[in-house]
Length: 231
Image 1 (cartoon, rainbow, N blue to C red):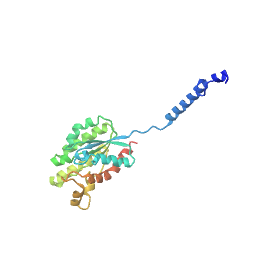
Image 2 (cartoon, rainbow, N blue to C red):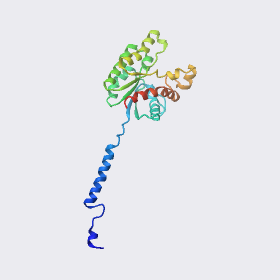
Image 3 (cartoon, helix red, strand yellow):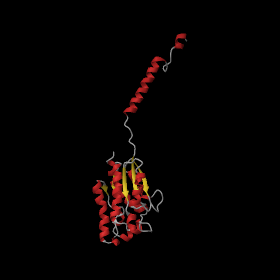
Image 4 (tube, helix red, strand yellow):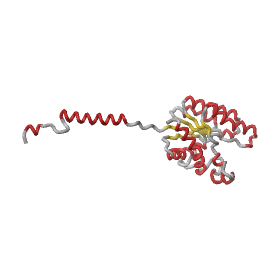
């Protein structure tokens, strides 16, 4: 072997090799820059009381984990945040909404009012609290699905009419989405007594895991619509 041949640069070195390597690097960079960016999952706040928190249920069977699973199964790229606090009234929700909204989010499912009903809180007070919560969510640019509660008849017709009306009134005033009442999928079943036995916990107030599944099946499409407007 001649000395000249032994001193000849190999393919990967020298000016020609450096140019080839530079060309490959530029090609990879162009490919990376041209590739579409992966969209970050949307952030959805589930804001409410024990119905949202999953009271009395295993950690994976509450409203939020079942909603997360349903949305994922239907192709939604979303992370659902459990902002439910058992026992919360609309006043309690208003007291903590600023802290909840301190973390950026895209949308919110708002389900409050059940504990106001249990305590007989005046409808106008609940209305004012929910109005303030919606105003704060609007200021943060969140899309909102408002989920009503339905007043029982034992407080009298005037109380029931005033309480039931506050949800559609507020939805219209703030331009937010309004769903059917949270427990409607259970209470709409043919036999009320059988529905309570099959889909509610022993307290008759909170749904069991099967009841939550019915609720999620009903609310899921509305939440998908809410998320789709942010894509």
